[in-house]
Image (cartoon, rainbow, N blue to C red; front, side, top):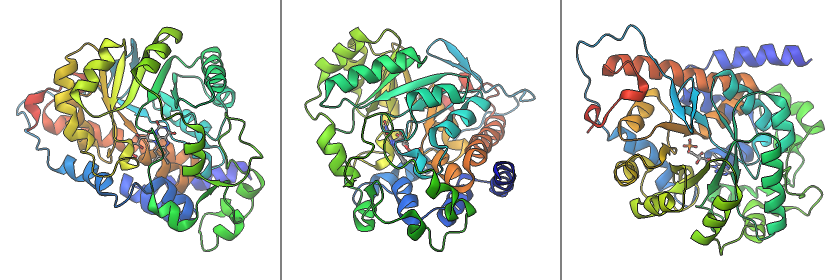
Length: 386
Ligand code: FNR
């Protein structure tokens, strides 16, 4: 059964040639409320669309007559090399898309030679993901009001070899995702998944998934708690009083590198540097929090200039094409993170689909760098874009 399922997932994944096709396959494959949870964004989804359209507004200026016979995608992040400048973003409740959830994402990221980031809201435990695959792992933290819970998450992450702590700072309160509101999306889902899955094409939904649900965050002791909307659960448990003092406190307690995710202003980026952050992620959470915010790629250049090498700068929000990655690297990012691209892959074809998301972006990035005339991803500069 498992082998047959895998083979058919391989076939499903191989038929998808772009991230857009993975998205279309995911839309056919998983129940609509679960697709919408991953695909949707806040309010009118203006920022989510702008994340993508703003990449179209960046213009490439290809350099002629350079030898591009060897394309080198390697870069170093936080002192270690990765095979390509693409990192798995933290995503909560990944197990809704596929029961192997974050374990499948970790295996796909490690197979690609890069890093996986486990969310505080993950469907798989810190221990399960550590055991699932060997490779670099980061842990993403939301500061919860229950500081004892935060302490235990940090201790478990450190003990299980998560090398860096990524503090997400753009979920002061839950963003309002109207598709979830309309769908009555709750944690755990209130209607049986079999009912939700009516009309869905992927065979996983007929039996296997229902028998092995991963429908609530696995690391927070929420199993068996009452059904709630995701927003109400977030607003009940996340701490809206978090300030720079908490960043300073985490910096002093976490032994490894600290990354701040969700920075959109140069002044905040500088303050992160002053607080000892090793890296920042320029991100608007894929448009899932403050609708109306700038696109991440629009915020990147000023932030990269302000930080000016004193911390590493990464970007996420809107990466769908290899050329998007070229543009982000040219405007000052050392690497990009991908969220939805992996969610679509996982929904469409499990681990094979997540691997496919990496391989599509890698192949596109190789061709784009060659045509742009920059054979080394780590050396592309601001002169390549306007
Ligand atoms: C997210 N994101 C996210 N970020 C975070 O720090 N902790 C989390 O638990 C989650 N959960 C989450 C779930 C889902 C389904 C999505 C789509 C996103 C945000 C994520 O890390 C990243 O910032 C965005 O996904 C980047 O935008 P793209 O690549 O989805 O356009």
